[in-house]
Length: 440
Image 1 (cartoon, rainbow, N blue to C red):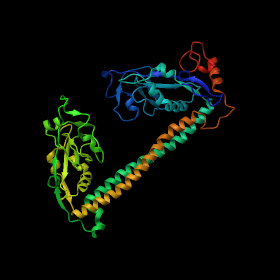
Image 2: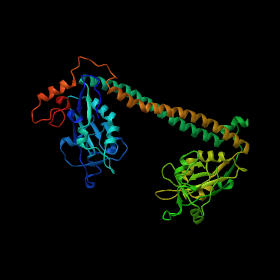
Image 3: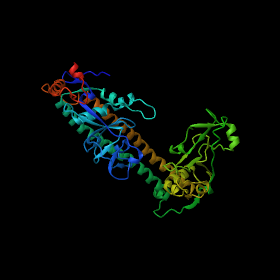
């Protein structure tokens, strides 16, 4: 992997020429305690996992401190400027110690830039990783130290603005979610059609249940051991995972006529509402509808609305508006579930059919606005996601900040540092060998 130097002041080196990689320590379960010195694992680097602790006394180099540059060399991969408490870092993390030839922030940004390439070069199936030797040999274009600092300063500034943009865009996504929830709440309470009714009085709506206005059924899972029950084509077989889609237009699996006959599976028509009855995550209580004729598994309730009594899409929106209420009806131990009786007994508001149709029209109109905004948001987020790699690429091509011909060339600094080192000591990073700059 060879890159052209932006100018003669930049030197071609290997990462191991300018940093020392310190290995962490592997732990056995008995050594991981509920209190003591924190053990920093890869899972903790993103702040989303339980901490373990140790009471072992280890050499100073096995501890990391706030401000240290760390690199996860398996699983997630990537550099981190550590901001937590003093901790013992785990085996799958390196503490990256920069020499005086490389600015720590510059090293962080360079590692951030090449992490996707490092991932691609990783080997191993269960736990892809890069070896220490492979990492030390990773090629690096090294600018003069003064230019490194100018690059790092500029990246600190512009990437902070990129982060601010991403934060604002994430808020818009959250606002759109709340907007949809507010629209559904207004629809199911009658507020959305107050003006249409010409009255500010509460709507005189009836109450009904799903079972009173719809036929409710379910399905099952044909025996996996019977090779005649599943095929590449046939009747689409829908699971509760599909309810995350607004409309289900395809299925991951298909069942045969033999499976339908043996398990008495019912084919449900287009427009059938599908309610997820199982799922501890966000799945349980989700509502979608079939855009294809399909059968379902036992984790789904299939709701075929009698459209002479209720507008199907109104029922769908009313169920979506009461997503949390439906989830709370679930029963069971570790994995509470809904059942057919609870779905049938779920209470719905029942406005006049004409008002149901008007509510659906207004909800669809408002959701259409939200979808157009969401499309623009996604385009903006895609653009923002490309900014960081584009800025990093520009920085390491020498195009982000001015280059000063008066800067000491990186190769001169490396040679000067090597000359000042004892023959038994690594000249810059952690290995006693000629750097690429010295060799050149």
